[in-house]
Image (cartoon, rainbow, N blue to C red; front, side, top):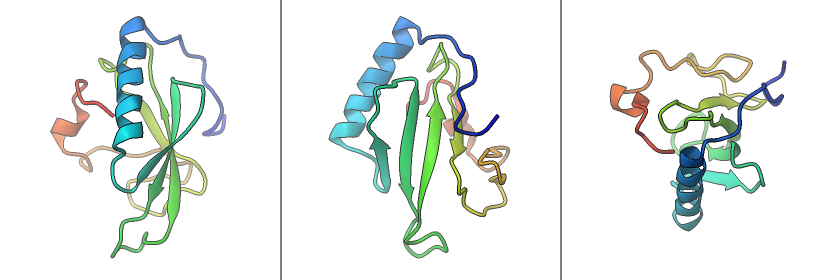
Length: 115
C-alpha cells in the first residue's frame, strides 16, 4: 500500500464532520503561515502544502502532507504523512511516515487539539 492509497475507513461522525467543516473554514480565512490546503471535495483527507522554513536547509522547498481524519475526530488523532518526496529528517521515514516520539511536545498530542 502506498502513502496515497486509501485504507478502509469509516465515514466521519456528525461531530467530526461539523468540526472539520469549521476548521477548514478557519483555514481558508486565515491559514497558518507556510501552509496551504489544497482544495478537494474530500473532507476526510486533506492535502496540505508546506513551505520549508526560511533559514533552514528546507528553505525554498515545498512538501505535501496528507492528513487522514478518523471517524471520531477530534477524539482520535488524524494520521499525517508526507507524500513523496518526503524531506530528509531523522523523524521522517522514507515512506513519509512521521515518528512523533519525543519530537512533538505533549500538549500538541492531546486529542482535543485542532488542525
